[in-house]
Length: 339
Ligand code: FES
Ligand code: CO
Image (tube, rainbow, N blue to C red; front, side, top):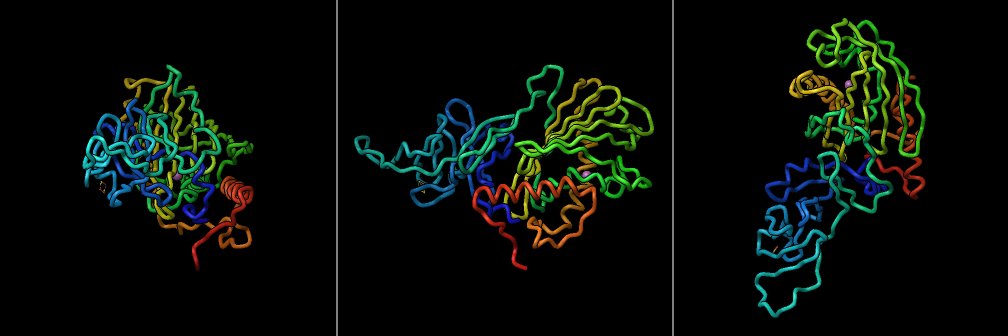
């Protein structure tokens, strides 16, 4: 499935940029192959417009912000947060500004990021109760580009059979290739996947897991939010929670933005954020290296399927089934790369 060719995917919210990146002016972003510009509007909330001036097509992201509006860096034409042209510096005061605008997208701030939907969203951004729960702290983790497709990344995140191989260097048990099975419950937004997994707890990890034991059995209550976000909710035996959110924001068909943040019900003294990020970075690197070696065009349609499957691929197969249903419900056929 080629993400940029499936129109319905424009109707979902994607985490595109840390809000802090917008503090010093407009920034360009490419979402589903569309060039957008992000900036902070007059009330400090983010806005997203097509990155193109309606005068001579310059990229607005090359300009700057003034009073919550964006000024084109070429001749100074100025747009408001809704994309409406509000000022043409070359016009005499009495001359009316033409009724022009550059397309605006749906944009809002949530969980420390600017989120964008290119067309009218089908559902609100998913809720994260821990975000407003004072017993949890918030840790931004990674914001980086991966050379893969969003579906590849998502299905990997529910694939327990790769731990013993890909993660031998961190938490995987090389002699335990048989993966723990998820109990999956489909929901309107995607699915919930629950399991108990027993994995290695290296000494370096004792502050992260809250125990010195050689292995730990973790209660996982994960969620898949269609199309490309995951909640990884780990509960250690001590009751300590490590809740990772991953968004595989599709830049184009073969690149994603990995946006990852974390909630923990402990303190910086218990386990410094740097230690958490160093550990999770190491694991994430293992995933990135192998996923980037796969073909980015994930075949979804059963008739076209060129991949073999095993039991542990079930979460990924449900994702594929649900995405096909989504396309069907919106009158679309799967678009794929020519062989
Ligand atoms: Fe933007 Fe001329 S191209 S003001
Ligand atoms: Co992995």
